[in-house]
Image 1 (cartoon, rainbow, N blue to C red):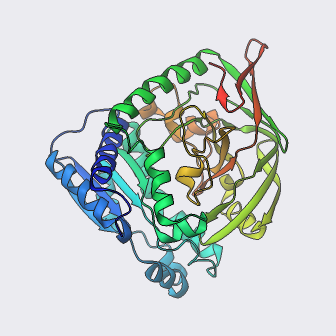
Image 2: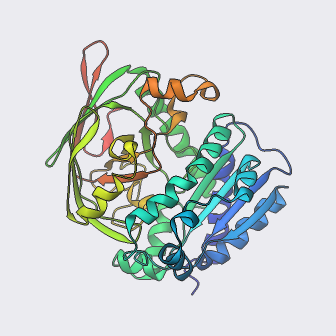
Length: 401
């Protein structure tokens, strides 16, 4: 089933290449190593991206992701040693990787629902060193990544849309109906850069988010900046930072449901005290949420705080996919936090010199988990500046810039 026209598919591939090259802080060089990972359901888009990467002179490694049956069988029949195995070939590849493109097109969102969460956590912990290698290379400007979603019957079903309706949502969100999507993305990139510069200049101390269901505060922390629309995600409209996890307090509520690890969760409510979640509840999937947040010490602490401006994002409905849901625009924009691992590139200093001791001192959270929890309610976000002054930075779904 051709869910995109040939022109739209070409534009999607071009946009991914734009995202990859924009996300790199130092220019790519000819013959750099790029890994292209793709679900089988998105093979047509994967083939186009591969062609464009080869034409640019990259050395491209293509890896199709395992089917739901293969992934399920691994978790079901493997023992603890197998789940903790880290391939030496993967380690060598990541130590020499310059770029990574991931095309997400799941054939199933629920195939792991009968798998013990502990087994999934063991794999996540085992693979954490690969993320650390990737992160360190990115800090040095040697690596960049981007990702996107391709419509599948499963995604459409869980979002209560037809596949064509789902594809239309993606096309709208990614500007695939524009004459030149990369030109449009470049314009948005410049507009958001101005907002990020404004936020940095405020010299904020504490950020408070209030809605009908929550009153939540984070301490920004020292030497922090806001990032967003950097090319890493297609689409991406969020403006985010990784705050000092120790200053998290109050109640956070995710009114948007989510699929994760084969599980469906709904209406997550977290109460934080002194930086850690002390109460965890959910209308559906509460046990799963508690298990994920018990993966390691950092899993019950936050690694990201984010706001999306409705003026940029055209996403206006639940998509059953975090990439789109965390960029929800709609009537009120969205706020989301991620429990778990922080983004160290939010550091305003020389990121390449950000060692483990300094990360800990600055309150950057560390975890094998990173899970975005999204609130789309009407909200008001105020900042207490280091001068003591209070200002509203976000209201009615948009920044007050």
